[in-house]
Length: 436
Ligand code: LLP
Image (cartoon, rainbow, N blue to C red; front, side, top):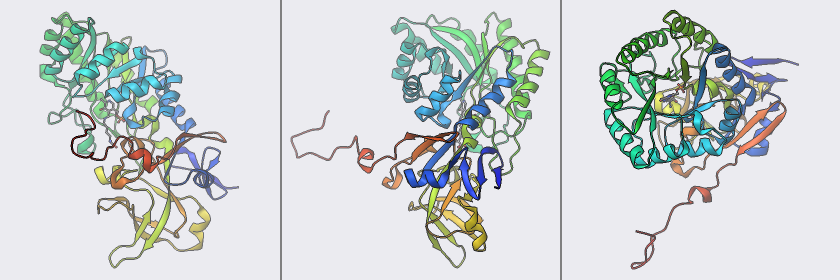
């Protein structure tokens, strides 16, 4: 019996030439549930979480899973049961987190555009903290809290102007980004917030970007944050917690990000050296908890030789896997069956979906020996895939399965076309109306 794991994803492995997630054959899952199909390893998610937990052993730390990475209810439930809080960015995420069993006192609310209604709902739920991202939001949140007879717990999200050295669309802590309040204006913003009766200052926050694969940007951001904490507290404003955001990268294509426990051992050493080792810490990891735990299984529909390129048309598309189209992101693509590999020589293909856009590609220049009807797996598809999926081209969303050892739990039905038309209305004859 041959068994080996794919890089970055220890629970995705070939056993007897067939690709498995934990103890489940992906071919069997695709036979049962169809394709495209997202399959997640529960053990991978919990192991990724325990790496952070090891890094924080003995510390006063709360891990708030950034649920935008994968907001499927069963994923949230898994993390809630494992002791995570949640970083949310919308009223929809608040409702999902609560439905999945999150404790409201462990929820923090980030985002540059919180609406008054979202603020009211989060106040009513009793969340732990609003990560406020602008001076204007400070005033609106104060007014909303006063009207509700509450005090809103806040931290200010600082834009530390540190280059995370990642794709420009996913760096968030540079001066040119829309996120947070500029480092130089933070003290004044805290001083103003401290005068407002609807706000209670509970911490400080930053998040510098995503898919970060080096230590240095974190160490730089931490230094800048701790300088700020010192000056804000010297001005008489105590900060209960420090939130260092998320952003740790994963291995998509030979990337070598630090392990969470190793990174946090280094960061804790800096915190200790600067006298902040006992401070309450929050972090907001998303991708690094779920990214390498998931694959997307897809069927090859057609092989299409071309003059300049050969195309391998699969039944997953940019609506299911938007990252290549949006960020030119690389996802490894491997066959479900290794036996097919040995039968025919590999051909170089562009792997594309059925959507009517040239941007609908999943992988460029991939050497594969496949035939129509065979299945492929797109790897590292646990983060920012299903949560960013759309119905473009009126394609229903894929189904999702969570594997736990030899057991597979269907955690989301394949969307029906009828359900995807659910909230829509045809025009009615003149004189009648669907509403205001
Ligand atoms: N906290 C805040 C305030 C964030 O904006 C984000 C991600 C996170 C935490 C989690 O970051 P992570 O640990 O997942 O890197 N769709 C893009 C990624 C966008 C990330 C946006 N913010 C992608 O597919 O690469």
